[in-house]
Amino acid sequence: MSSVHRLALTPGEPSGIGPDLVIQLAQSHQACELVAFADPELLQQRAHLLGLPVEIELFDPQQVATTHHAGKLKVMPVKLEQATKPGTLNPANADYVLETLRQATHACLNNSFDALVTAPVHKGNINEAGIKFSGHTEFLAELTDTKQVVMMLATKGLRVALTTTHLPLRQICDAVTEELLEKVIRVLHQDLSSKFGINQPNIYVCGLNPHAGEDGHLGSEDENIVKPVLNKLNKQGFNLIGPLPADTLFIPKYLDHADAVLAMYHDQGLPVLKHMGFGKAVNITLGLPIIRTSVDHGTALELAGTGKAETGSLQAAIECAIDMCKQWKDAS
Image 1: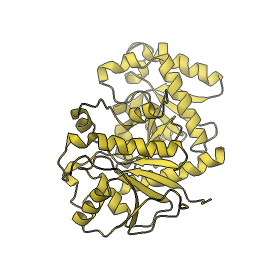
Image 2 (image 1 turned 180 degrees about the vertical axis):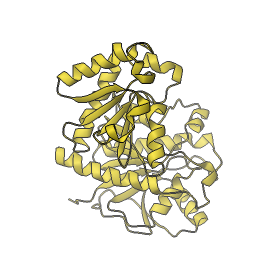
Image 3 (image 1 turned 45 degrees about the horizontal axis):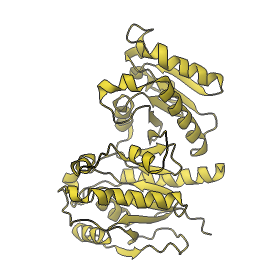
Image 4 (image 1 turned 90 degrees about the horizontal axis):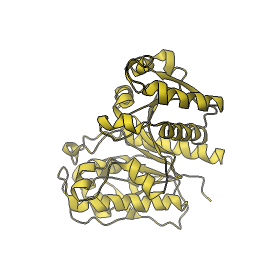
């Protein structure tokens, strides 16, 4: 049995930069076996457009995993519904995008692959096709029958997990309940330990309201919901610090000791993380029965086919997935 980790790679929206990134990464050696779940013709056409040589090889699951060689690319073929043009969305290909995710996820679930790495999808285009879709995180949770997942982004020096993900701002206060918060913290604590090798992780928790509610004068949620959950779990051996005002939490005084920060909603914690490491950060779905990492950016339609797409985040996602595979194997 090979000691090389086999990663399933989905290029995401076919008219975006995902196929570009896959072709660009295929030009360099990788310390794992990469298998793209995609239409081979799409990848060949994009390689020709970019002027980059690539030898596409259909994936043979019977072969032992070997590290990726520059200039080659193994592909598990998934057929596009319609031909696509870089930068031009086509809702007819929405199910193709989801089918690549379905096949890659199932391949990870049956242990044929060690991890899933995803390039960006276009949520709007999928919804235009009449398919309700709020993001990779929620889709993969349903696909794997996982009741509670946690979205976490990571860059050098900072990990930020989210209590709620893609919700309108006016719905967040109602969504942050004691039950949800406890479930999210348990998943975060468990995966920091099992998939990142951090024993007894220190988790710093943002308050929901400005100034963490200022003792109830700026909202009661931090006093009545957040604090009771943190107190309960700390008595069970967790290392939870908070709730802390989000406007002063992201400073060295706290971050030097934090293994992760838990934000209450999407735009509370992610602007700070992306300011620190945009283009090199990794999106990680915690709580799944598989390892899944992704990029920190969108489909960048205007860059598709131009050769100007930056591969930093996808490269970081691959390297993070490899590291997580090693830690998870060690912990199991």
